[in-house]
Length: 194
Image 1: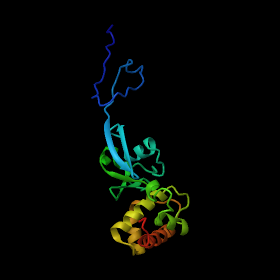
Image 2: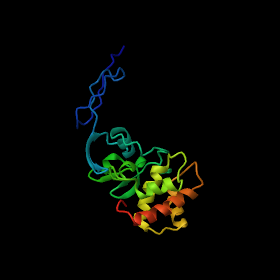
Image 3: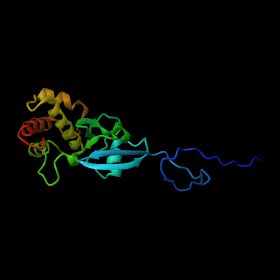
Image 4: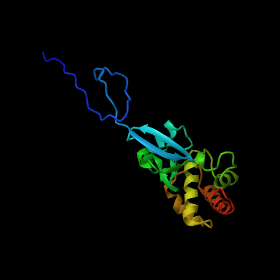
C-alpha cells in the first residue's frame, strides 16, 4: 500500500489571506495571490486587495456594496452593468477590477452629487416613463449620459436607437426609453450636473 503524500500548491504571497482548512487539501496553509488596487469611485478614493480575477461589477457590488450596477448576462450583451471608467461607458461584467486601478469609476449611485436632485437623465427617465421593472435602467442611463457626452445634446431617435444596441430591455418597446434619452440630452445642456 502506498502512503498518501500531502501536496501543497504554491501561491505567491501578496497578503495574509488564509482560507479555512479544507479536508480535500489536508488542511494545507494556502495563500492566495491578491492584487492591491486603488481607484476613485463616485468621487471617493478606494483601496483594496482583490483576487486578480475579480470583475469590476463584482468589486462594485460585493466589496463596495454599490448594487445599482446590475449583473444581467455576464457576457457583455445586455448592458445592465454599464459604468463610466474615466468618463467613458464600459461594461463592468467583462472588465477586471485591476483594469480600473489608478482610474476613476462612476456608477449610477454617483451620477447625481450627494444631496443634489436627480441627474437630468435620471429625471428624464422618471418623467417620460423610460422604465418598467427598472433592472436595465441604471445601465441605460449610464450609456445615455456617455452618448450625450460623445454625440451632443440634439439626438435623433435613429442615433439613440443605434447607440442603445448594446443595452437590452425585456419590458418595454424602447419608445419611452428613446424619448427619455432625447429629453435627458436636452436637459443636460441646461444643467451644471451634466
